[in-house]
Image 1 (cartoon, rainbow, N blue to C red):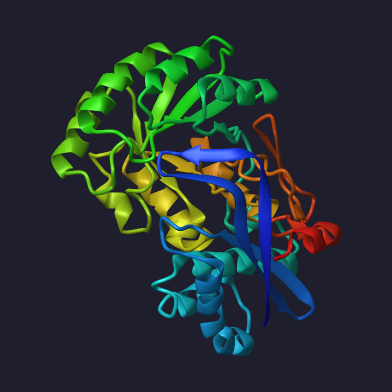
Image 2 (image 1 turned 90 degrees about the vertical axis):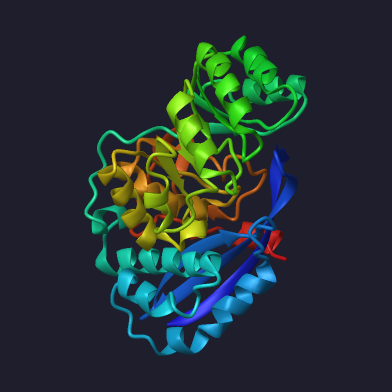
Length: 347
């Protein structure tokens, strides 16, 4: 297989702030795998919190050049098994390759990726739209810009979290979900949960730091008025069982776990333990979102608005319209690069 990398600087429609960082431009790496004249695309984004840059991820992928060039492409799971030992320290790079491999495999087989995963596209969940931390007035303006979504995910981790939700609630009857990105203590989580429940919040995503004590996690699990969903505490397959009795569900991110291949196993494992399932995203282009969307039949909740948050997108594919996920008519993951935008956004 031939490997080609694209580096993009993706401008956001608004600055995007969570409890630990603010972003105005998201740097992204797209991997293109070509085999027998057919190509597949995968994507991963820079992430300072997890220590991954475009340079480090590119270097990881280039370390696998010889294996990829000599590999006779079969199915994505087999390729993942070959690559994982080499990329055990860089799940982000592994994910980008795995997404591209699934896209390639779907095109070679003439089917969409979810079909090749033996999933059925029936009643799939809608995606939320994320409102990043800002002044309350600006957060209200962001909500007003996207008035027709049925679900909003509100980033929290400030000194006025409940007041933010209270004021946003005055402008919509939509479902709210909140994400504290490790910004609360156990006491704050329990206290906030009762107020937030009264304000129509559905669940709280990762309120405690991943390093919080087991006792704190279990106390929140038992006492919180709202379900608690793991994110930073559920990175890889072995983390799922650790979340049992500590979280009511798990949010799987493809870049963190290493791609679609392990994500499917994580979601299935979570369901066997009676936990709710969710797939989230980074701020990323339609390449990454189109891949993540293939897992919707396995999900209770979805957060796939990453490309909606962009001012410009180098790709076309799966679309998220007011929360409804609309498949592309292409095989594989369904995304393709738009050359005019590629030329404009390449760095």
